[in-house]
Length: 479
Image (cartoon, rainbow, N blue to C red; front, side, top):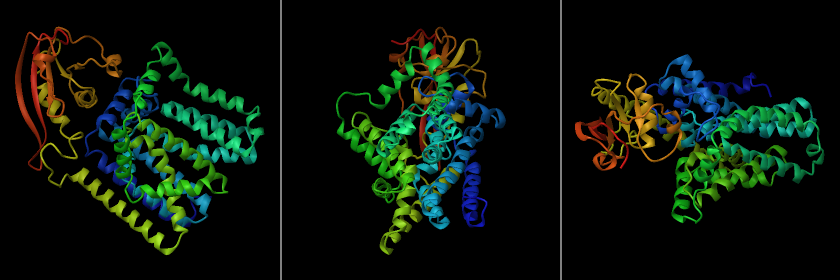
């Protein structure tokens, strides 16, 4: 397949336009909780981190060093990954269908899935796996056919990078083993070329292992509790997780993904069958995990990344009625996604007080500006928040100022590793929000608590958030 052929021109026009639009939008939307957190990874370079491996942080460090510590620098990596992931998905479907038209429409289906339009602008650990999963599938198929050392080395690099991106990449090993066993390719198991591939993968993930060794394996403990943290089934959480996926990936495309999985599992095409094994393992794991703890929609993104396009490919081979359905589903998703982008950029739709879609990403620059207006002496005064979800955005937007910012809570996490020095004895200007309210007098040991200022974060004359700034004089710890 030569992507430079004229038949692929619509692909490049579309993905280039979308990437350019996302880059324009990126500077006009405040950072969310997770985005800001991973930028902080980049500002505090390390071998690994409390909650995730380091690839996302290293990438943020690279791009923010080039483009500055701002929204554009934070997001350009995700936009580029979205661009190249689109090419890979197109290639996957083209290799299966041998039709540029089918491949392009299947790619449109991916972009008609709401959550991917967010994930291709927010740099998360999951985003990197989008880049690796298709090459891993295609490389394994190539190994089955040619068994070259170079292909084994490429597989080792891809698996190593996946492990450097996210811990759940370990799940990739299961479908690979299943495929080899089902196909009875014992020669792929008892093969000396595996050894350099394994060594390369281990070398690549060695920073993660080293960091966990010196930090008592806290990442693995955290992740085991984070993904499946309870020992009893929570049916409400389970159905909430399924409902979140149903809405996040476009309700009309949600069944398309499972139809694609069903058809691929029965396919005689090796690429489709291997993809189906990946899909079964991924969706089964996160469905099982959601029985015990509500799963975030993006956790299962790899499944939908593969099977919304594959499902669209299969439906295009069906009768006219089914083709009409997929066309409606795709155009519906593209229109809604475009409107969502317009709203993110221009913020034109009035929304009820405290129920704004922008509440997590709007107003933090103003909040930190107001808080710093009460810092008189940076050796004695500092800013504080009382919840970890506030800390990442607060620290990011406080980087423009000289004041220290502390997270004051009882939860041990990455912020405790980063936090240098102690807030004890300082006068803390506490940011108290409408959504994360604390009675500071009852929560902290202070010589006195005074209310400095209260103000609203407004958008289109509606309240997005209400902020109270309070000073805890001579902070002495939590009560």
